[in-house]
Length: 323
Image (cartoon, rainbow, N blue to C red; front, side, top):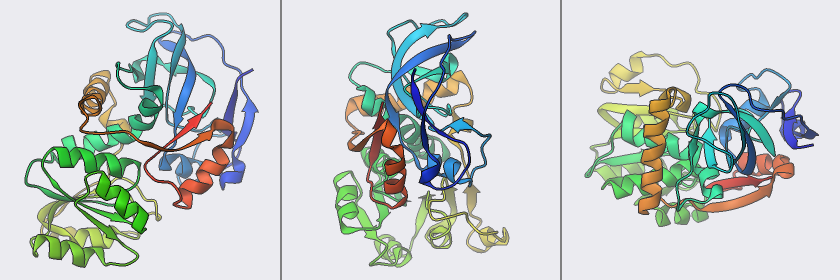
């Protein structure tokens, strides 16, 4: 019987349980997948902890790559043996599962399964951040927080390939070195420097057209200080905790700023959107503009350790769980 990482209550990493699960035959519009690699993301810890309430019990995990084992009625364009990947389908922390065929995409030649599993959620997030919400172009200077994280490293590489100057915050010298090696022109160690002051120096007081912030509470106010009038504040995560209540008047006071709190699920809600975003990502990876480097792997049964390391900021870049 296949196994999965499940939770019966929300809490710390100790609530993650390695359990037997039943996986039946796919129904209409479904496929059965045998996972070959599973992605690890910070949203998984939000769902586990209770920050994002979940129906229980449940299997965690949002992205993976695998091989199609069976195809249900009405499924076209997929067959047994196809390599596919997906994100935004809860339940990837499993050896095998039933998945919605409309929400998976074929993995193109030249992309291995581990890279596909690691890139889907983070890579497609990077796509909507810098190709849709704010279309980064040559000559732009941007700020990405957590530049040595999974999304951060992809944004650094991709934005640099588009001709932008990239500023990124990190928490250690090692992470600063990693960000720099991946296209970050100005890595800022927030434990040694004030990132607002540094941004002002880099831009000579002109500030920035956009800030991409996945840290949340600890960086929100500073991020607003980094924006030029009519700048865009993109809050796409809250690794340091939820942002406290905000007086909306602050956006007017600081120069008629724009604010958005996006979700990948909204940017890939339709099949056409999913195809557009994933194809753009795969194109960037296959061209060499974006390289997906797996910095850590854990056995799927050791997901508790992976969560502990992720929340303890002991990981960098991409992490994959191996069934």
